[in-house]
Image (tube, rainbow, N blue to C red; front, top):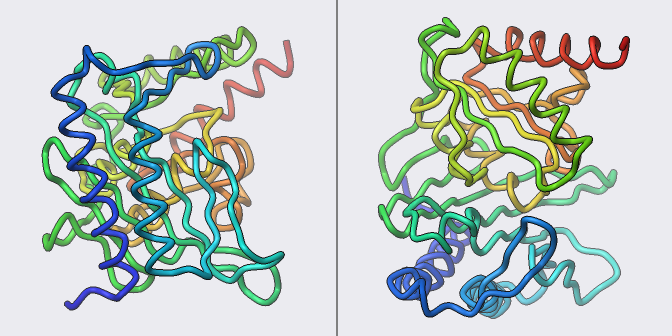
Length: 279
């Protein structure tokens, strides 16, 4: 299957930024690091990668808007039809500690005439392993040219579920620990790898059966959203079972599964919240 012009543009931008990040990763001790917030760091490499991606995409699609982790929203006009949603370095803490598990994430959002939006294309590029996950609406999901499908496991005991912990927020941390303990009693294989976009792609590839996280941003999950859906998985918010398709990437929370375990995982997490609210 031939790639669309937009997909070619996204891949070119990600691979160009990836080459720079890999060089910086090899000299991680020399990186300039600045505080961005409690428990959240940003490196000079992060900014440089975002600039590279922005310039490549801007040159190719000058009318498209941008939503970026470091630079925020950028748009030339009051309204737009297409918008790039970019995380230039997902897994920054891993990167800064020399752990080879981080990625570049680029999603393409389309705004319809009724004001609703959807992600129509996405790539997640892991330069260290040279794995490029990609998907376009209605065309399936792939890692390079290999088709992706979620796993067929329907037993929590045989599954790997991954998550992301909140930053230094006491209320959020208590909620996370309650959810983690509730799942620990049902799922022997819980993991935290520190890169949301890769967690989602690993669900799409059948490596994990599920992933959940609160305190998440649109740029963390936009590309993974369509990759998971096109691989046959299900994405929803954690708390609101009606929010299966619309606006999930902007909800600040996400639950991603192979579909077979979605109901069970939501029930466990929902019961945790109910118990908290009743206390």
